[in-house]
Image 1 (tube, helix red, strand yellow):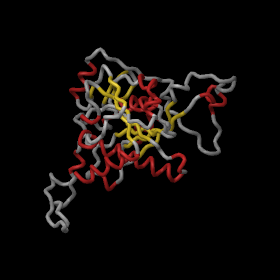
Image 2 (spheres, helix red, strand yellow):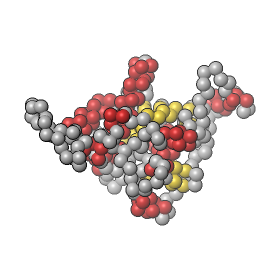
Image 3 (cartoon, helix red, strand yellow):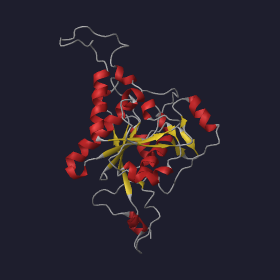
Image 4 (cartoon, one colour):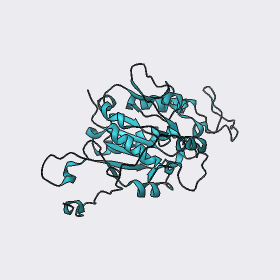
Length: 294
């Protein structure tokens, strides 16, 4: 049995890295006219996601949205021609949604792992308002800060969209080890991850057994979830029955040294201009200009 709606999650909101630029860390260049967040969007597209949800802060959203647009082309359909009609009718656009972090989570539990969970929760909430038939059955997560060739995901689309878990692995390490590698999780696993974060994170007061907390924690000890690493959030995942696919090359660019290592290597990736068009959907009542392209 295969899922009907695979939602792609791209977490951006989290504790800042060491680049210290005035723009979002996900906008680091990784190739000519190619940014890290664009690579993550293409990974979701290659994995077969029907929708893509980018979790970012409000102040970072305008620049990211101007660069990415509102959809990305599905690489499977981009060159298919079924009839003599307009080429755009044979293509499939994957909508991109932008999700701001909830104000109550800012500076409390807005780590990168929580952004993944919040994006999944928002996708479920929004789709539920439309219809129960469009609810996400599974989520695929791609990170801007992990670089590897994602085109192999095309041949694993059935595995990714199956009920079986799917993990990308490098040197025996996965997301469970804190690496920025793609993985899937179900709504049931989402609840387990969220419950784990809420149980292990601290609040403003010291936890007590069955009593009303009265002692406040120090400023450094409060709201520890904002500093949770990926392995702290997703380390409880079960890969025993999951599909684990190993990759030969992987670069971690969440630091300046990591980015230097990648730029100094022989590994090169290039932008797909036919897929990343920064296009926008026409509003209701507006004429589709693409009809006049033929």
